[in-house]
Image (cartoon, rainbow, N blue to C red; front, side, top):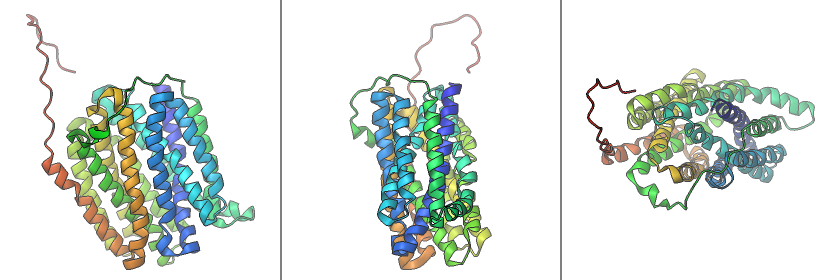
Length: 395
């Protein structure tokens, strides 16, 4: 259990570091190359790659085992970082898609960790892997400026620097996955995706989709808002770091809350945080206001993400759990690809205020599902044989 958790943690930390810098640089490259209206396109390709990666990881794990699946997808991310370093628009899109495949493997890693823990600790277990993103939050954005300096010294465009950093970090993710013990594929049966329409899946699915849409739209356009106010890469790194710290650093707290109170209350709190964050970004008058909004946006997403993931880890049938979890993540990331692309269009039409206003509305949509979907009734306890001795305390 310990070796598995450490290896998964290291792989996710490295992959998040790679994506943090690469995604930010890709937005700026696209803006400079094709204009603000197309600035969300590389992010959309990265998110689409993540959707394909999560779905593919679910199927690969069920057939080849977790170690093989992670090695293949992290290896694809290495290739993607190399391609994206060319900074030409076509290469950038292909590279971001391949990086997304590795990010998909990193996303599904939280469920692999949860499988090693008992039911009452699954929320905390998966939150530990989400917490690994803290490394990326702290390190990734703050390597943008140094990476640009290294790229310049090598005769490359400055924004190729974060892609070079991504090459190294995705390589670390491959090495971390190689340290996993080879495991046989878990027993699985063909999945009927009609299960995705059941109450146990619909509530976390809709909540996670809307949280992802809000987070991606508001966060993706933040670099352009900062650039419009003539802030440099150092300020950009600070704001993106605050956002990613919110996304990951408090994940163990979210996991404990999900184990203690259940996923639904945690999701509700997350929705409130997302709405407040979007409104704060709407009215942000400077760097400090936007930094606070980005942090709260990240933590609101984290609450919904961990709360929904905890529900899926407990309530799905074990023999098809990993495939369904991959399918849910694929839907979440597939939908958010439209957010990345649409955010660029909205920014071109009405600037950052329009993006944040739409984000606030999207964040509120799961309230409808949470109100209509009743909490599933707990199964009736099995009858216990009569005992003459005192009952031991429940653990």
